[in-house]
Image (cartoon, rainbow, N blue to C red; front, side, top):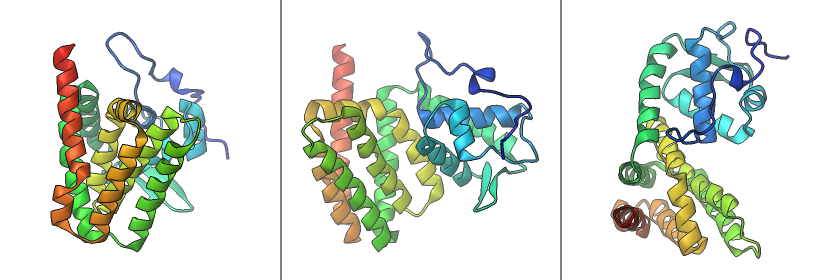
Length: 253
C-alpha cells in the first residue's frame, strides 16, 4: 500500500535539512526524527499511523538502518508504538513528548564537543555498568559480532573510514541495547550520533585497532558481570582521553 501524507512528496516539502553556516548537517537518525516531528505537529498523520520504514527512508532520503534506529528511539521515549506485523502508530501524548524531546535534540546539536563527550562518558559508563548486571548470552554475542565487524574492516587492505566509523558506532549502540533500559539506550544512541565526528577522527588518527582492543576489554568485563572491571576498563579511560584530546585541540585552535 502506498502511504499518502496529504500530498506530501518529499521531506523537502516540510523542511530544508541541508547545512548552512550556522546549522550543521543533521545525522540521518536526526533527520528521520525531525520528519516525524513535522508530521505530528503539522497534523499530517493519517489515522494515527506513520508511513512504513521503506517509505520514510525514501521520503527523507536515507537508508532503512537510520529509520529503524530513529523508530527505536521514539518508541523508547513513548512517542510512537510499534505493533509488530501491523504498523507504527503515534501515541496520544506524542505532541507534548516530542516538544521536550526536540528541545533535547537541539541541545545536543548545539552542544560543544566537550559537552557532548562529557555526556557520552556519563551515558556509556552507566550503560556498560547496567549491561554488566543485566546482559545475557545473546547480548554478548551481539557485542562480539559488532566488534568482529570492526576488526574485519580494520584488517582490510583498503580501509574505508566511513564504514569503520559506522561499525564503531554500531558497537556502542549494542552496548546501549545490552543495558536493559530503553530510555538510557535512546539517550545514548542520540548522543553517539552527535559525536560521530570525534569517533571518525579517533579512528583516522589512531587507527581502528585501538578501538577493537578497547571494545574487547569491555566485552570481557560485561560478560564476567564484573562492575569493578567495567569501572576500570580501558574503554572508559579511552573516552576520558578523547575528552582531553578534544579540549586540547580546541584550546590550541
